Image 1 (cartoon, rainbow, N blue to C red):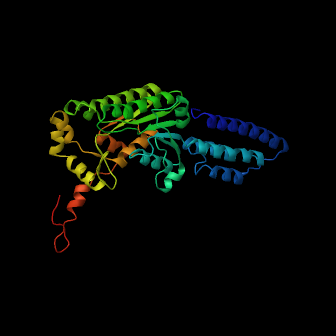
Image 2: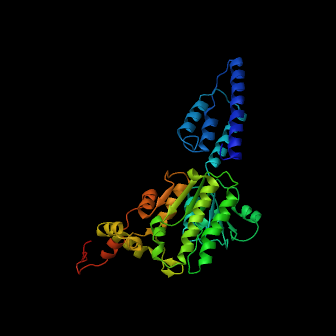
Image 3: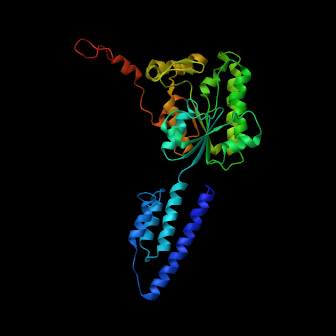
Length: 357
């Protein structure tokens, strides 16, 4: 079992249960008794959900076979109960989120714990955000770029899956190189020793990176560092297990900001709706470099977080979600309605909308 010790425990319990049941059935046949014990089997099955196993039809089939076993042994019922409990816990993944207190990372953590997974956030501050969901997350402080390798390895733990939302923006080339490249490369090197199922990294849209010649020279460090991080992730787990979410501009939240740049949800949604079709899509397709990028719609931070979570949990088969359209599709995000909602606030004296889209 790729999940390690828990898989071994399940295997051992299953073998013990099979052997004990076989012995009990032989003993029962020798006595001429064939009394089933559906009550204990039902109680044990209920411990892991309506199918008797969180893994679906195969678990349901196993439960039906157990229902047919002719035994009333309390020991066997106890073992079956333990097996169900361990199987249920094995369905929860251990996920380490690098940058789990940040703009995207905190939302990723919240979504993961809401699905019952064991989440550890590693960030420079290790601070705990507000919200009841944060009580279910383990917060660890580690700079990623400083200190001994042993400290970094202890901080990231032994996860099944890693998500990196680590990144920085600014005007200092070296700061961009360290915050986007060095931090992620060191983390990936530490995690390369782990048997990770998947490694998800929030990078930048290829179209934006391709337009770097239109941007100030210091941003070249930013794009180079993002490329270094992507390579380190792929080297750590192999290309098949490396996943990338690559947004252009992310909006969301309740406020505006410059450092780092932030656009509130309502305004961002209006821009996304405006740029998501018609002439703006055509302009984005035909205009060169940064001019084309300027007409691409931004993407909601909630859609980015949902896409990251689906990749982390193996619910998305695409290894790279590049740009707003791909991210929204993977996240099943609803169409942006910010512009329509804004227009709808204008009403005439009778309360009817003054304008239509």
